[in-house]
Length: 84
Image (tube, rainbow, N blue to C red; front, side, top):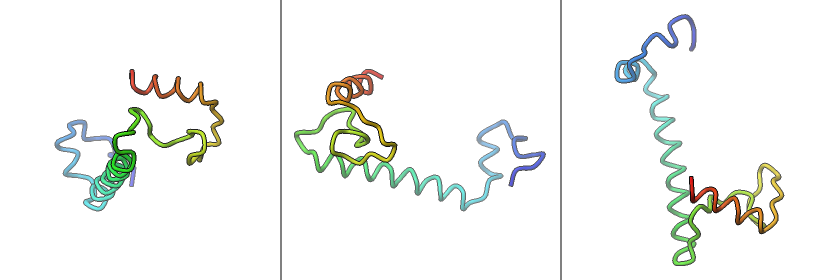
């Protein structure tokens, strides 16, 4: 992996033919899992769905980065997520 010719294919359509198949399956599988989790969150929230809620660091939620937002700061971050 890597080496002198790791970035020698600048055309993405050509480069995809030169990466291992397992790497492609890993990328597709990882993104499928992320999308599945997103759809599950939307289904759980139903009509109460909040746009921009990615489920990180909200008060009382899963907080792997130990972010401590106040409810006002969290509302501001949600608004930033919606705008961008």
